[in-house]
Length: 284
Ligand code: NAP
Image: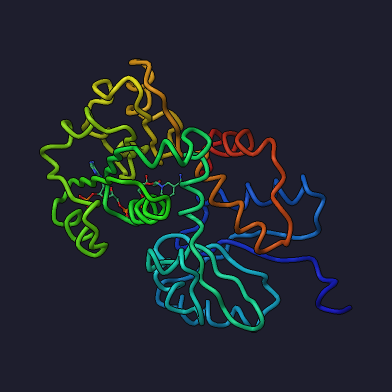
């Protein structure tokens, strides 16, 4: 049998990895698309990650997604990095092209796609944005917003120094850090408020901002998807403020990987329900 006739194999690497929803999502899409292939979890130990990723080129695995805490190792193991991976200095997707290992990051596209269903590029070009958080997710949000050309981006984080460092690295006058103590003032004047912190996630305290004080026409985008309705989203909805949850980003960041690994677009339909069922089964 020639290599080309083999069913395509892809997966997700992490440590731990049992909680990942990616196998559920990609397997659903493979079934929907009627494609032969498989997408499985790979447990990769952090101290062995670079070597594991470098050997990908010598296997018939089409590519892998990479989750915490291996995203920097994935970036460093690759022969080349796409612009999106370089913007963040971390990869959530590795694939092989012409014998070279490529590092990519689909979080930028995954963050932007749902936002663009709610605001046109023209609306975004006049919007003031507040980002809460300064971890890996916030880096992807910053990268995506800078590519979209937003005029003013304000970032605040519980640990002020981390917000200042992220802003310093970008070195752009339209992007600045706001002290955590002043976050509520920024909530009142932002057109788009993005929670890229872990606050509000299951097992974490709620984010300490009052979403009900946001502008009537504002959009509150919470990247968290467990729970699907965070306290932030619930408060915003109570006040009649438009919201966007993290499940849409989770799906949107997986689509480009599916295309890269299996050579076909991920079909539309049923993915949110499949993810909700997996989450409510309590195994994740
Ligand atoms: P991370 O690198 O660990 O960063 C966590 C961030 O949350 C830090 O800025 C941290 O602030 C802040 N934080 C933690 N607890 C807090 C609290 N009680 N109050 C205020 N801030 C708090 O994590 P990450 O990878 O950026 O992920 C952040 C969130 O985004 C997670 O909930 C994750 O599920 C979500 N996410 C969703 C998607 C999606 O596809 N929807 C993709 C990526 C991430 P300090 O600096 O002060 O510690």
